[in-house]
Length: 372
Image 1 (tube, rainbow, N blue to C red):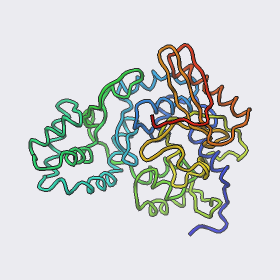
Image 2 (cartoon, rainbow, N blue to C red):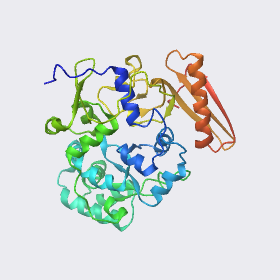
Image 3 (cartoon, rainbow, N blue to C red):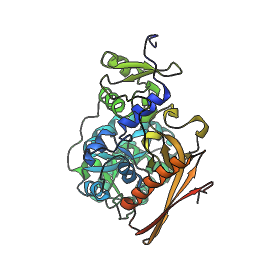
Image 4 (spheres, one colour):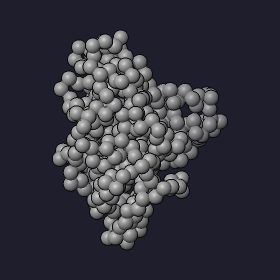
């Protein structure tokens, strides 16, 4: 039950607190590895977004820094939170993956019909042998497994392997300026160490609040793709501060976490598709105005977004060649001259770091077919 005397945090107060935790009020000087750890990973369905996420958060960011960490295997790409690909530190890859196993079990249950007669323990053992012999594409793994269970659904076999094993995408996939198909091996094999104990739910709640708080139980469950977290919050309640949002929903936070005033300036920021600041809560109105709900993506497709005064205000796309790059901004509502000028400056600064083209342009448009 929400305490009636719990302080109320306005939407703007929640916005500024979240942006502060997400390093989006001002760029931080923390090292790249510390940022990846502090943000509890970077959403990474596509290969470039983690680099743009860090550019918008870190002072003097050089994409080569994250790429080098991938090469040295200090960070990896692995399916974890919400059953989606994230870039995590090596330790988080090893400890978060078993914590979110219940979500992978739920995913596997959707494909049970195609696995009749399949010994899942044997499948997991065989798949491990295959990917640790050498990294395999999912197509290669599927074809190998079909030799043992020819009557099974090929897709279901691949899902079973993916859900049963902590598979990481090996380099050069995900490295800046390089390309490579998705080839997989186990996290333990790639990182050269034994499995680690799963992260405790208590620790994960504390880390989540540190990166996304103040937040509700439902917010945390949405971010992690887990259920039944209420009892964890209740166990931690003596160690947490509690608030209410404007709708009376109980929010939890770390007592000493920063909560800037609602009038704290929030400079414009260009965020890539699937940025966690837009996905880290069940109630996303702290960053996405209700009028723009659903405008930052359709189905499983997400668009690059622009924050202005801390809130989603526009979509953006980067097009270019080796000689010329263009950022096109589609305002979702009215953007005054001052906001456009700030966004233009931010776009130019981004292009100087994140595009190799010597010439660049920033355009504002009323409609962009981002489905191209």
